[in-house]
Length: 363
Ligand SMILES: NC(=O)CC[C@H](N)C(=O)O
Image (cartoon, rainbow, N blue to C red; front, side, top):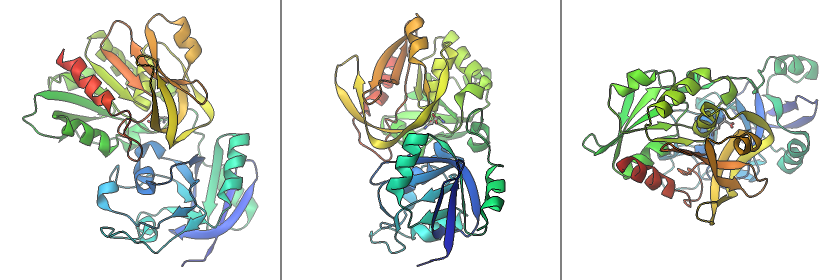
């Protein structure tokens, strides 16, 4: 076990020390915690976490290694991990590599042997903030200088960095339904959920125009999840407005949901410390049933703005804090959710939303 010392410094001056995991180095980002008890590889490779340091509240990380099928993108884009008990030993029949080897190979620096319960309580009371992990710099003033260089998540556009550079296809070419997916940082399992339901997808770079996507003659549009602040994605909001103006069926997940709201004139804001985990309860206001959902977001759409607007209807509410978890555009075939129905990792309660979208575009 690598027992090289590492330091975690938070923007408010709080320091935690522990041991290095992953790659020797220094890395900063916004610190946030995920309460999922499984699924570390899917979480680390979800492009929505770009530029963030993930604290896993589940104490034991690494014990089942990594497998290629669990990748939600081609490689991890996170700015680091903070864990309690890190295991280099893994026991899973089909695992090919240890998490240690994987993190090292991808240049991700992490810190273990941290009292993650204390750290999470601190983030819960003080709110989201930047942090830095280093196994190189021990001097706190020098580390603080590096931390000051880390950009604020508020006002940060990251989708253009993580989006595909060229369009690609997913699924069966002969499938009857064709969905144009705008890649703001798409998770692979969303494409799998479409393919399983006989939908053929063409995935477009984030800055593709509506006219360019129309050339492929899609039946509908999908706006993906992704990292960063939706408030500074003017280009994406404009594309969404064009999709709506042309009455095309539209489905959005997470960042895609925030973009749909913004295209309808609703503002978004940064939450105190966000929702990240696999057991977030939401209520479907149409069916009256609750669903346990997978979530990963730091921003949210304004419920006050929706209440004042005549364009949107709230379809889902988060039961912990009554924030907006789903919306529908009143006179258009367009809807979106703040949570992750593709849930990789997470429960499958909300997979019906893919069927709901497909029936919408069949009509
Ligand atoms: N999973 C996502 O799509 C995240 C959306 C957005 N970046 C947020 O943090 O709220």
